[in-house]
Image 1 (cartoon, rainbow, N blue to C red):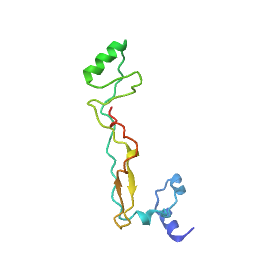
Image 2 (cartoon, one colour):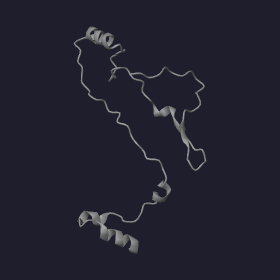
Image 3 (spheres, rainbow, N blue to C red):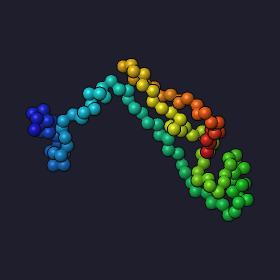
Image 4 (cartoon, rainbow, N blue to C red):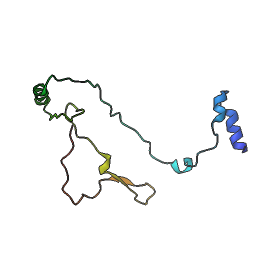
Length: 119
């Protein structure tokens, strides 16, 4: 075992499970230096509920009440209505500079685009 790894291992807490941790740096750690911090926003709903309908007429009344189209295939909806951001429409463009690339919309398809997906 390399000396540096052995020293790191000796500094670990006296937990037998920690002895299995590899004390050597990962291959990517040098490449990761200077990268911007990643923050993931919480996209979970505040609250979710199940709604049951006795018949199609009741479902239509609820659809009118919330102002959103419901079908027998509808699995969920957001209230109020929200646009869903799809990562399928994005791609990473490498700028070749030290600062890296950027996320960009791809060029439009040749066929006609579908309407914006709303739930």
